[in-house]
Image 1 (cartoon, rainbow, N blue to C red):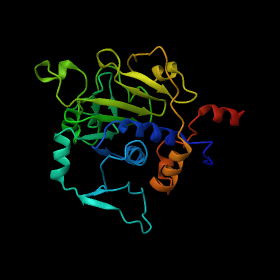
Image 2: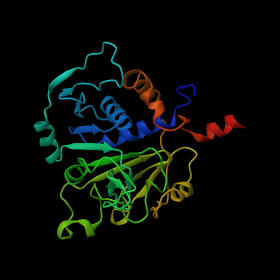
Image 3: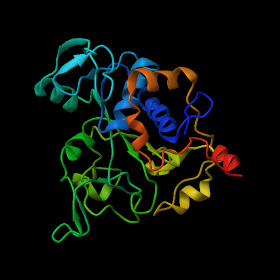
Image 4: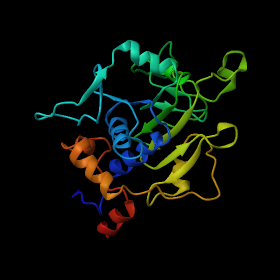
Length: 273
């Protein structure tokens, strides 16, 4: 696909939508785990929230996002030292907003990256719980799910609860953890949040050419449907320029969604016709 400011890719749409998750956070540590969330955090820093704190992925604060892939002489603009101690000061203090990529998520926002199937005898062993338990009860979290289907958005509960969600049955003494704050879920079909009744997951916007019925069909539980669902905003010319030239000059993002489809599927249908 030839990328122009008129024809943006689906992953570029997701990156732009993902960046909005940090818009009103102010000075917090933005942690994007895997490429799309990293690019979304960088775009947020360059556009909607310049106060965000970013790291070089190692142990330094940086003044601007570090481009993905080979640096070709680029030198990170280091502002300070960021050892594990400082990372955890931000984490436990709630001054962090992470965007991560769960393997499964359920209607409560509980997430799983550990196993598929019974934990005692799983069908597949994945990463283990990693930092999901502590992160989910300490600071805001958002999610990127590149393939929106019923294997990812599961009926009932996720196979193994790694990240805490809005399920009172799982809370100690039935009390909501102080730092539990789930924000947005970005997928290849839509943007969702937890703004429904009793923190029900709902559709916040539909990507161009996608219907609510399609999103519901690919979700293993009932989604709350607002009276009006806007279309996910197309990336602006400024956002596309930043993504393509500063954040991801090697176009690594093109590998994240199979086939690297266009962001507005109606254009693909027109071209096919």
